[in-house]
Amino acid sequence: MPEISKTEKKIVIKLVYYGPALSGKTTNLMQLHDILNPSRCGEFMTLDTKGDRMLFFDLLPMVATSTSGYSIKLKLFTVPG
Image (cartoon, rainbow, N blue to C red; front, side, top):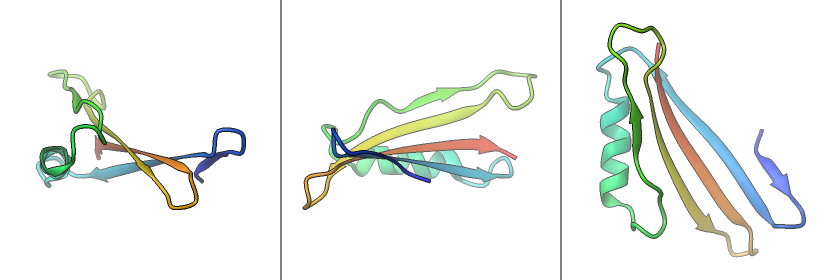
């Protein structure tokens, strides 16, 4: 469920891409990062460790403003599964 703060008028949504290896999750986030306005998204981060299970993820934070004045932060993650 999205987190809503009434004092800051901020909504944070965390979206997780979950699926098998090599199914395009990371590629999808990389393409989004490439086409988005740099002032609207954060740094694309990837953690990849060889040989360890479930220690791989990607993160792409994005920020937008709604017409009602809410700041909407979307955090996109990928994890293998």
